[in-house]
Image (cartoon, rainbow, N blue to C red; front, side, top):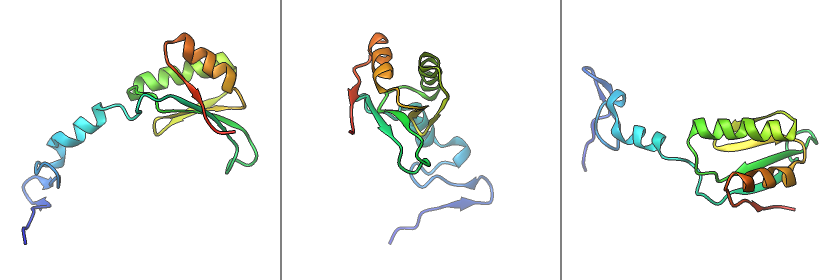
Length: 116
């Protein structure tokens, strides 16, 4: 049985992966720098769990958080509606799948339509 240090009174909490204090953790900063998407851009429409309101979702973009927020703003502007970026997914209010796909193609992405 191996024991692993999880807390030190000198440095505080210890990262279980790299063994360094959480303030100096190397594995967490590397995970934040890595984009969340896999590069397969998927555009879908969803209304489940939203009180009957339709939302266009864009998933799989291999962009960092700042670039994803900027792209979300451009897409919302092109559609003329509101929306947000949550957990690497761009949500645009309304059914704008075709317009979003055209805008993404113009910007060099290769989007695919998923869902019904």
